Image (cartoon, rainbow, N blue to C red; front, side):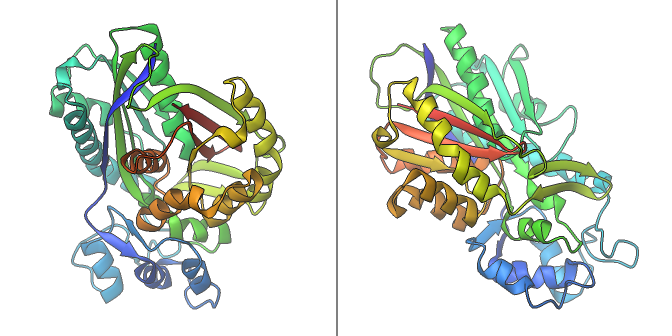
Length: 368
């Protein structure tokens, strides 16, 4: 028995921020010594992101660009917060307000596609690294969609961009252990809440690519015979050596702070293929037998590093780049956005999904 996916759902905030608007926002919100810098423009021009959706868009965005204060958003620059932005407490209150709404929308869509009643779900796995609240996202899904009070809840927290793959691993374990299991996996992130106001280059790059969104899958345990639906058959994980300081996600007084060193693409290029060859061999596959790829777009250089080290064609990474261009890097939900798109396009299988997160760690999932 393994997890067979019956329904997919995605959701994002209503307000888009284009690359040009992102640069204009940065000219106001970045630290005083960055606002007029010549190198801020190329960061946005070369980001690979055409637009993103953010919960601090809309009225707050219009206020920043117009120099007004009608929204009362804590993200508006003031004499007190210039160069640091809102406190972590202020950011978490916005997470508590917006994250459950996005998660409920994504799960409701996945349940509709699967044609599963909410009260038939036995397990709920939630994933998030951009906020904390309790009762939180899981409680909102249960209470607003009518899941049973006895549903088994598991939260995968603070694991970064590959968190949805960890969530799918947990879901597959439930499905494999219980033939009656029906499982929801929901990943929701509000990366924009951690907008950075200083002058560190890696964090300014994060400002240009990260976004908000939610994605969910609904599946159940089914035996092995071939199915038109996608089946998760294997998961893998690899800690890249000597990379502890190259990607991190820490809680500061003014939001969560990302570290993303310039070494990350080179580390991936050096270590990914040897491990992936070994991992695929346990499923009786070689790299050349993988017919489609879901690559988490941590950034354009990371995508290029994966493409080069695995010898992939532009066509094989096109869907990953398209989702990145249209939605930005939403952290954990992004992989599910890409998988949904691949499934809708009728992408051939086997399909391998790859994500990269703090550690530096590679997570993989194999779908048949």
